[in-house]
Image 1 (tube, rainbow, N blue to C red):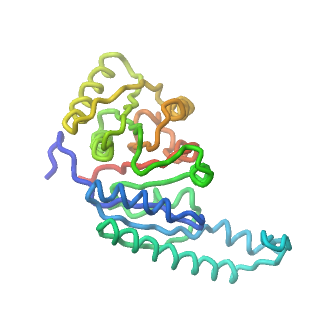
Image 2: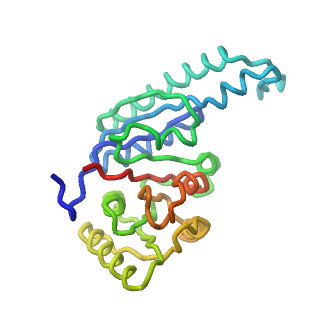
Image 3: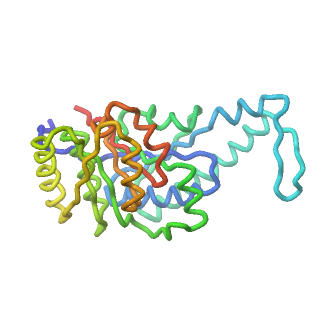
Length: 266
């Protein structure tokens, strides 16, 4: 049985994948993190139902870049294209996982790409998500991305999920600066949280900086991410920093990858 002050080891990291052309980049980053965490890498390919709904419309057309001509699309055509992309994504995941020497699995589901990952199997410990805007930035090279994060932002509110988030951030730091976001809910509580976070991260040789965030002020979180600038966010689902707002509301606005820490199982 896990004691209250202990943090259960991470077992699985799920990476949400879709029809984006640069899934290889996402897979490589997720595999790197899985290797550092000694976790199984699970790829979840999401067949976005929005594409199928669009294809079913009589007016649906696709325009090819080479010819600039509009062509009628249909549901069977989109489904065939999804099968091709699914196969390619699975092969990429297998190749990267073998190279990184991490165990892996692959699943396919259908739904809205923005919501499916959090509805995934409850036994998943961590979920890595990336926004479309981050993919675009990566493609044009604005951030000068390099392997491994240069700075990590992590939420901490004293909960079991918060402690696991700190452990994950500490394991992934590898020399990166770590900033801890704590809820602005009173100086005594905040000082206690800062001491706890300092102890947990200090055990891994990390000396964190702290930022207080008014619970639910997601715009402030986004601002802090942009000001630092962070390369990775580790967010405990249900953190008091979120103030009860859905974690998807935050991740949809981030321009960097995020690792979501699921509730710790008893």
